[in-house]
Image (tube, rainbow, N blue to C red; front, side, top):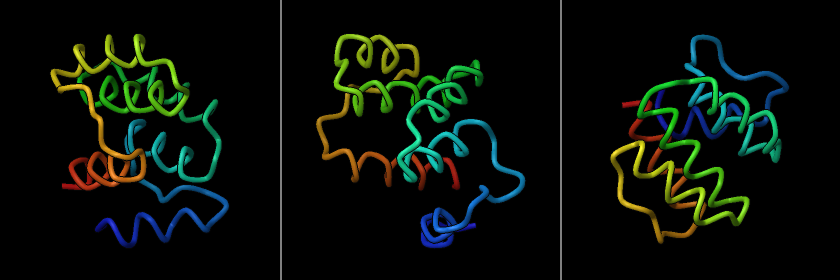
Length: 95
């Protein structure tokens, strides 16, 4: 799946099959469901989950917590617009 198809899939009521928790979290975030997105990101215990978790705390406005998760992900803290960061992460994870 490419980024355009992933973005378009957010118009559906359910996420596409076969996504990991981090991508499913981004899908829910795009639909405005931060709580579900956050639970999914927390449940993926690797650097990918930490990267999405960092982004979600940035969305929330909790920058100190976001910084912690960026460090756990091994990524620099983003200063890009949130929509650009969502796209960057989703594109990388769809790889």
